[in-house]
Amino acid sequence: MNMIVLEHYLLVGAILFCLGFFCVLTRRNAVAVLMGVELIFNAANLNFVAFARFGTLNIDGIMFAIFIIMLAAAEATVALAIVLNIYRQLDTVNLDEADLMKG
Amino acid sequence: MLLVIIFTIFAAITIISAGMVAFSQNIVYSAFSLLFTFFGIAGLYVLLAADFLAATQLLIYVGGILVLLLFGVMLTHKIQEVNLSNESMRLAPAAIVVLAFLGLLSIAIYRTQWPTVPVPELTPTTARIGTLFMTDYLLPFEIASLVLLTALVGAVFIARGRVKK
Image (tube, rainbow over all chains, first blue to last red; front, side, top):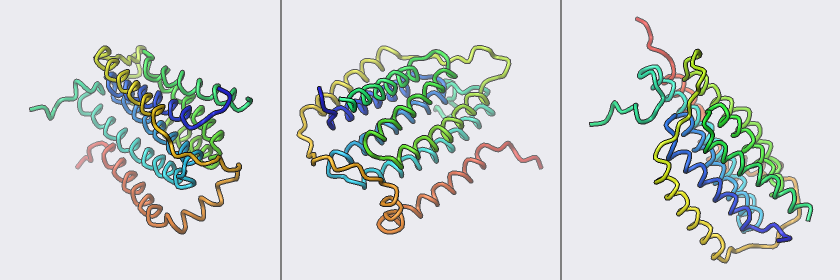
């Protein structure tokens, strides 16, 4: 391995995605689940930028990544507002205890 | 050769700290590990010749989202609770699913013939991004501003307490 090619960046993205996915699946704390979602966003962004550099996507990949960062910021604000509201109502942020809508 | 070493360092920072985010037993450690993950990703963006995006990553993720997550951690735990627990559950099934998925992704990455082009010269991207925002991407740009405004108003509305009559 004496050249960094597309596959290396894709592999880093895949590992990052899997760690984020693991975080989302296993955490009880809602804020920790949000951290996992941020990891997944970053993995997707890394792939877009890698394709922009090595593939035929060109600068459009970077534009996509900027829009994804914007959406991640919007998602984080709304999700944290919901988490704070859950905490005020139920006095917990554990996802398995917030089951008010369970039939 | 130097590029390989720098790539390895940044990839290692990213993956190790992402592992800390996923496995740490203390949620404050998880939040601070996320800082290093974002930093490593910004370094990888620089290696990929996305200079503007690296700066955006640092400004928005580290300066905005991470601080917001830390606020979330601090505000949802009782101050007198020393143990900011961050427990995990369903470890074994999740590990099986995630490892299977990682294997699938790795096979897909190495088996596929990616349509690559010769890597272009390093050029600054900021001016081109600005031009594209005002020409080809004008409608998404405006919609983005609307989405951000809506998210801001919605977040304030959801997070406020009950209005006393």
